[in-house]
Amino acid sequence: MKRILLSLSVCSYLVVAGSMALAYQDQQSTKPVTAAAAHPQTPPARTGEQVFNDNCSRCHMPPMVIPPRITGTVVMHMRTRARLSRKDQELLLKYLAP
Amino acid sequence: MPRQDHKLYRILIAALAASAAWIGTAAAQDAHTLETHAGNIPAISGGAGYIHNVNGGVTSLEPQINPVLLVPFGSHVLLESRTSFSGFFQREDLTTGPFKGKVFKSVDYAQVDWLANTHLIASIGKYLLPFGLYNERLVPLWIRNLQDSPITAAIGTRSSGAGDGIMLRGTAIQSSAYSVQYSSYFSARSGINQLEAARTAGGDTSIYLTGLRLEAGVSYQRFLQQRNINSVATYISWQPRATPLDLKAEGDFSYNGRGYWIENAYRFEQLPIPPVFRKIQAVTRIQQFFPLHGGGNSLPTVSTTKVDFGLNYYFRDDLRFVSSYARNFSTQGNANVWNVGATYRFMFPLWPGRK
Image 1: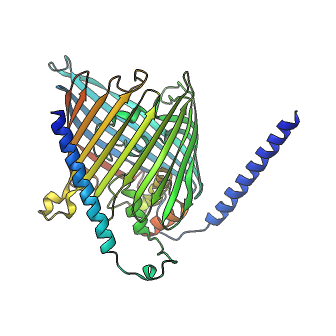
Image 2: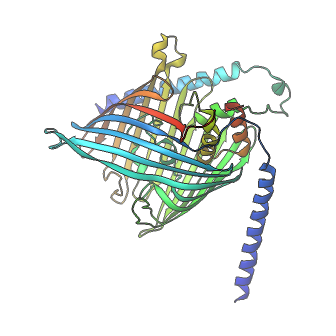
Image 3: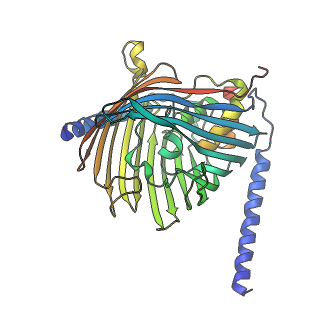
């Protein structure tokens, strides 16, 4: 039983590792050529949407809707929890309640 | 006063003055108005759920609700607190008889945060100990992919998972490619009801690579009561952009034992299957623990291996059905652990107001 379950786990991790490799390959191959890519010295500025998607998903499913009246409060809370910078907080506020 | 002490005081005063100047400069840079429609009224957030657990043939019914109170004072000060109300009901004779139990309530944290600037957030009160990935980030039942805690969750979080005192945290460095975050704290010993904490000191630092969405970090804690114990955790967390995968892994080391867990969660949203099945999330976790010095302190006393398989279904981003099966292997006896239930995340203003 232990062997079967361990083998199942190892198999699932192999599948995950495979999907990661594919994902990485996809990231490399489907990366659009942007102005920033053409000029690597000037990386593109982060948007509020990027900050939202990158940081929320580190721990949980990003919420679809945050009531505008509490957006500032929730973002303050998440800035504390996720140790976000002031800049990221501003980008989030502009994105969630423009 | 000896000459050496004078020198030490001068160095300390110079260091304090330098840090005050640095904080002041950064605060001045941060102090500008932001034009958005984001409201700052107090809010209640949190999670609620019900888990039906069967562990080695013994059934437990576990309803719980964990409201988080958020009260901002201006744009730099936040009062936040999470309280847990959790029921635990089992049959009178474990496998037979009527269900009996009680509801436990506890204050998980109650702290005041001063969001000084990018580099410094100071928290005072009862705060969650920033050790590894689990205690501070994954404990809420609406967040965790598997309802059972990792075996090593007790490492670095003694004795209540929280500390009483001060914690400093923030972003040390940020660029477009990466950011480095830190937390450091000192907790006093407390036996006050709902404010129980041990005398500890420690910290956590992590680097987040924005492009890869990869985070790697290390946590340290020095337990300063009775036997002084060092605990260390190293962890990684990865959510690749191209695939809805969430991979987390952590290794923990302490006087009472060492262990690790690796968890991956994959959402079916990109698979070529009917839309109704794309809301499924499959989860796998493997973990092992090896006791040292007899184990104990909420850790197993024998070597333990556990494998978990979970299937969650997201009706919405805030409502999901959860289920999991785990097999626990140890010399004290193997056991099956089943969990079935539902979790819900809520978030609403504390009082009605103008839209």
